[in-house]
Every structure is written in structure tokens, then in C-alpha cells.
Image 1 (cartoon, helix red, strand yellow):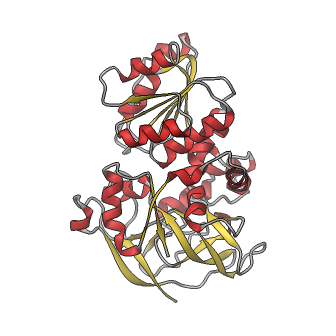
Image 2: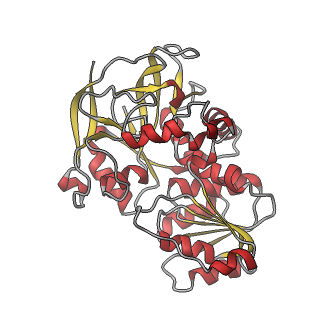
Image 3: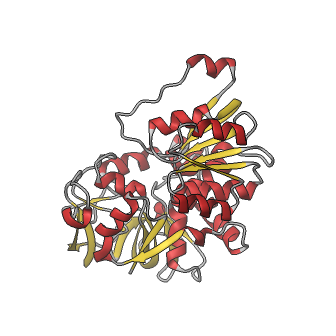
Length: 368
């Protein structure tokens, strides 16, 4: 079938993207789903820094590629058991096979075949259903239709608005999961979040959900800091301040029990580590360029019993966590709708990524 989608053929074109136009809307040939796969009519797809990282070249991927990894839609054709036409699904950007060693240990985010497929730009089984193009993280949601592995799909409540449902596929699962699954933050413990994009604000929502206190947030955008206060942050710090780390340490009586870095910067990760108290845990969620290195005083790991943890996909099991987070949203415990900045059309994506790069938005969502 012929579909319409946004294709990236070359990474690293200069901003502003409204002028260089790295994303080109094209008519594409999409093959039908094979065994274990679904044809999904995409209803909405979020614009994430992980997409921007591919566009600007800081997260290298095989080219050319149909972008978009945070998406929701309706099953049109199913070649997989457990799914039928009309089912509404959220796409998970790591397909989990369920049988490799990490999957068997409940660590779906580290699925080995899923990681290999994502690196190669294919679906879980190694196939490509886009003629002449690679898939983005098994989803390629910046198109009106997609073929995905059933292992990338999680059924959800069909009444959820698509512009909200899409957010659960990356921002919410990653940010809330970093707090709930990776760090396992306990009530009454202090937390700090560096970076207030969709993932960072989701981490804040997760910290509020589990009863962390105090909760400090750090960012350079005043409007994001103000929103964070509305969502439950007890203190805000302007990241441009030369004493930002000291402000965090003062607000948490010597350092946070848990520090979350969501920017994708080794420098910010070092700040997060410095803002963590003795015996505390520093969690990094952002994806810096592979060339960036992270340096800490080695003796502090032992003498201060410090922990540094990575969190990918929020250490989530998507089939377990997405329905839980949707239920918490329905119950008013996770106000995910506050992350939505604007909805855009397919032809607006280049300008929308300019807005994202400038920090002018939290989550813009492409609607079909």
C-alpha cells in the first residue's frame, strides 16, 4: 500500500530545520504485515528528543529512515494472535521477544534481538516492510500507517484521546519508569530532576506519585520551571546559575537521595552526580553522543557508597507498565495531559523540531 510519511535521508543538516528541511514528506510503499506483525493506522505520534538526536546526528542511525517512535494507532490488519482489527495500541520503542536472557529476567528494555533490530533499522524479525527505507526503533510513527511487530504493541483503552495515548509510548514510560522501576524511589526520600522535557517532567510526575520529598527540578527555561512547580516540585533551580548544584544540595539538606539526568549530556550527568548525597543514587536517562565520557571521583563510589544507574525505556515491561500508567492517569494520579504543548500536522514537522530544539515545547504531537 502507499502511505505518506516523513523521511530523513541525511543526518546533521543545519538548523533552522524550517529552512534546511531534513524531514521530507513523501509517498512510500509499505508492504503488508508478515507473521507476528500488525498493520496499524497511526493516529498520533509524539516529537521526542530521541527523534531530534537522529536528525542532528548526535544519535547516529542507519539512513534513510522513516522517523517517529512514540506513537499510537488502530490495528487495521493482524497477523498475530491476541490482536484484532479495531484494537487500539501504543507502540513500545523496544520490541521485546520474551525469550532472550534479559526478557526472561523481566528486563524487556534490554531485549537482545530487540536491540539488534533497532540498531539495524528493521522489525524484530529482521525484516523491513518499507521499500528502500529503515524503520525507526521498530515503529516509524511519522506516517499515516505502519507495520510493526506485535511485540512492539500494547493494547490500551480505546477511549483515550490519541494525542494523550501517544505520550505513554516513550515520555511517560521512560520518565515515570526511571523513578518507579529503575530507582525504586521510596516515599519521603528526596529527588532532583535535571532537564524538564517530556521525559524529565514525567520523572517529576513519577516522583510526586511515589511521595518523594522534597523534589527539586533544574532547567534553563522559566516556563518549564513554573509548570514543574504546578505539578508538584517543591523547589526550582535555574541551570544557568553558576551555583546550581549548591542550590540543589541546599534544598535537599546536603544532596538528593535520588538524582535523575534526562538531558543527554555528560556534563549535566556530572552535575547530577555532584548533587547526589552520600549513599544516594544517580540515574541517567538521557542519550548523549557516543563520544561523550562521564567522569567521577572513583573513591566516592566506595567511600560514599554511591550508585550510578542507567535507565532505558524506564526499565519497563511495556505490557505491564503502560496499562498501569494509563489507569493512574484516568484516576488523576498522573496528569500526563499537562505535558502536551501543541498538536501539529505532517507538513509542520521541521518547524516543530526547531521549536523542540529551542526548548519552546515540552511535547508536540503529530495528529493524523
